[in-house]
Image (cartoon, rainbow, N blue to C red; front, top):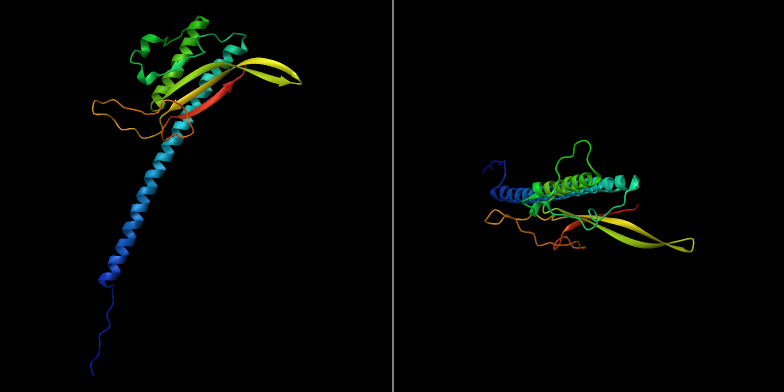
Length: 189
């Protein structure tokens, strides 16, 4: 009568199956980490865009609250800091005491443009004066308002061989995979 000795431990097949399961789990965890980082960066960009909108909206409101009209300095303004190599010479970058309204407005626009350009990839902004006709108790009232838009490229854009960056997006659309991400607010007088 032969006695068979009891064996303990794992077979090679069990170790192989466990290793495959662990490897697939780690790959999934890596993909989850990558997606999580992209979503966090996107949320940061949205927060920075909202901060820049709040800044320029407050600047617009401050001019409107003292009875100032918003002239062509605001209307049609486009902030394109990232593509403006002569930013410092184009705008007033400091405003001490006794600044005129025009100097102060240009300073606010310069700060807004800088805020967008430094915080948002391929960031740009624009301010457009528009007119709307509202029906108030059967009476048509025409009023001006200002549409303020901040745009940026939320995709991870690769650097070109010459050190520059390229974005394919040029405008706002409902598909940020092919165009820019945008936030728009309206400022009423």
